[in-house]
Image (cartoon, rainbow, N blue to C red; front, top):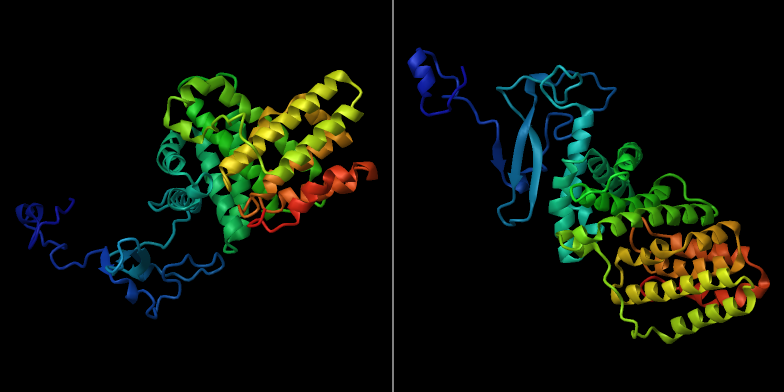
Length: 399
């Protein structure tokens, strides 16, 4: 019989003629002031999960949730565990037939909590975008498993990049969830509809974060060019989602995540204009194939647009997207083949990445790519690398 928790004695117990155990019991949820949290505790792992190699039974006085609220601040919410004299259960369940949570379930809850309270703000800081990532994306994630895995992968990666605590474990979680997300994501691309477009688009925004960020927690490549070109290829593929569902995205809250067209008359800083004009002149002088010359000219025009976006949205990660999204397959292939003109164009795109160097997953990609290109091209091309090299050596705050 379940107690209805009425005092001094519950109605159900009175009717049954039973002694009500709730009458004198202590509540399992206790509110304490935050200043009391740091007092010494006799429980050796109070508030923490015991090490796996510790087999001591602490279930006699097991952990019940204690919520601590600092009444001096409405924004500060802390919690710790405190012994409960009325509950006898292990701190963490280790078997699926037990009523508690498995370690994997706790990890997933922890990652979702981190995403909704902190990590989401690092993807796109504008108010409209923050609301989409904080409110709408988690709701969609519970409808589509590929997005749920993607959100958990991003959250784990964010933790691994911003904290040394459990970094290896969080890195492993990021890899596991991202691998699962990709396996579920690919079949969805065969049929993009008004129902799944928002989840597909949200996941496509997570992909660049992961592919730029994961090398920071595994092993950053000595030569970043192959990885950079692979990432650009992936981003080109994700852009097809926007093309297929733009009419739905643009009439939804997800429009806050879409890049707005730039003004053709917008002027850039003189040194940027001079560098891009120099690229156009070099292309005209050295590229003999008319088709390839036109493809390079279009890529340089896309660079112009990318720099305008970066100028309009300083520090926004979305500024890294226009160039790879609009890059032709032909120019990307020439970059992969090591064609000097193509690599010089790539180095100038990498300047926009360097301007995002303070973003945890973007750190180092811009300057390392520029330096790698400079070491790859011949001496006759070095003059066209001057501005990109100069920018890559500036602290990001000055760039």
